Image (cartoon, rainbow, N blue to C red):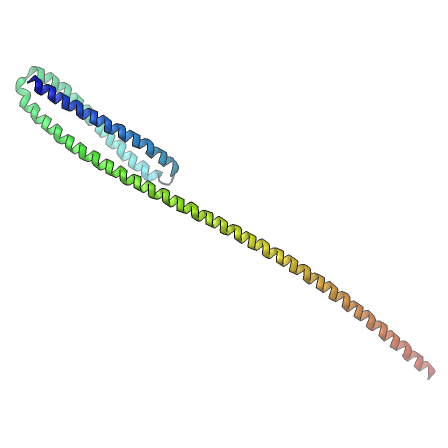
Amino acid sequence: MEKLFEQLITELSGFRKETNARFDRMETWQEKTDSRFDQIETWQEKADTRFDQMETWQEKADSRFDQMETWQEKADSRFDQIESWQEKADTRFDQIETWQEKADTRFDQMETWQEKADSRFDQMETWQEKADSRFDRLEDGQQELKDIVRHNATLMRENFTDIRRDLRINIQDTRSDIDLLFKEVEGVKRKTNKIEQKF
C-alpha cells in the first residue's frame, strides 16, 4: 500500500515537473513574442487580445493547480486516516490522469498555435522587407524625377537666355536698318529740295 502511495506521489511529482518545464518554455516563448511585438505596432491590438485570452487561460490553469494542490493535501490527510478511501482515491487519480491527457492535448494545441504565430511573424517580416525595398525604389524614382525636372529647368533657362539674346540682336539690327532708312530718306529729301530750288 505504501509503495502504491509512493508511486502515485512520484507520478504527480513528475507531472508537476513536466508542467513546470512546459510553463518555462512558454515563458521563454513569451519573451520572444514581446520582442516581436515591439517591432510591429500595428499588430499590437490583435496580439493584446490574444495575450488577454492566454492570460485568462493561465489564471484558470493557476486556479486549477491551486485546487489540485488543495486536493492533494486533503488526499494525504485522508490516505493517513482512511484505508477504505483507496478505491475513491484511485477513481480520482484516474480523473486526474484523464485531465493530464486533456492538458497535454491543450499544450500540444498551444505549441501548434505558437508555430503558426511564428510563421505569421516570419511572413510579416518578409512583407516588411519587400515594403522597405519598394520604398527604396520609390525614393530612387523620386530622385530621378527631381533630376529630370532640374535638368529641364536648366534647359529652359538656357533656351530663354538664347531667345532673349536673339531678340536683342534682332532689335538692334532692326534699329540699325530703321536709322539707315531714315538717313536715306533725309538724303532723298535734300536732293529733292535742291532740285526744287533750281526750278
